[in-house]
Amino acid sequence: MTGRPPGGASGDGRYGEDLFEPGHPQEAERIDAGALAYDPVTTGRLLALGVGPGSRCLDVGAGTGTVTRWLLEETGAAEVVALDRDTSGLGTLTDPRLRVLTADLTDESLRPGTFDLIHARFVLMHLPGRRGIISRLAGWLNPGGRLVLADAVEVPDPLDTSSAYRRVMDAMWQALRSTIGTDTSSVPAYPRFLREEGLCDVAAELYCPPLVAGSPLSLFWSETWNRMRPELEGTGRVDGDVIDEAQAYLASPRFAELGPGMVMAWGRRP
Image (tube, rainbow, N blue to C red; front, side):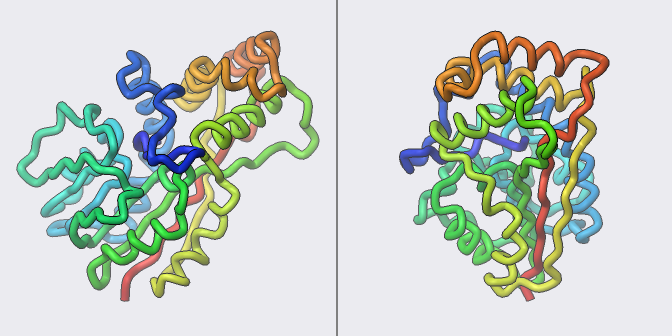
């Protein structure tokens, strides 16, 4: 959970403010809870790919700036551009190497420059025209530059189709698709897309962080469900009692599920 990417089911370039209002008092906390689960994997991969001193970096969907801050503090980057539709979460970040760009990634006139690293996490899956956006991102790479894309995939238990947890998760993905336009079906194809863009050294990995009671990720999903209650019930898949049961299970010591994972794919411009 890096940021609040633009995009909507109607294709109007908006990211469901009625679901996750940028100004909501728990929104930064919700995003940061997800970041606690995924940041170590993200930053470890970026280090392994050689992001280092002198790099020009673009953090797409920068959100509250956890990855942006790491790039500034730990890599010796020459410049970090933090791009988001709503950049209010970056207010505490001050560094002469930081350029905050308040913009919509779906705007085809956007020209942020060229970069040695472009990173986008939990952004593209919410956007209309995501395949074309990948082409544009690849076009912003310097020779030798790397594009790193990360988005969610579900790894459901095939023996569980009716528990409260499974029903709420399924309702959530349906509600996100109908309201925001979220679609994770093409995420496993990201390596193919990167190869189609002429990138080399293409590879990918799947990370499923521990989803246990009291963990930051459990708190992220709990707050996400709380904020989406009307939309969850609107799918017809669940009612308030089922949501309450799933919430209680998520917080209980007996909770044990393989939660949604993150596919991270990367490639290098020759």
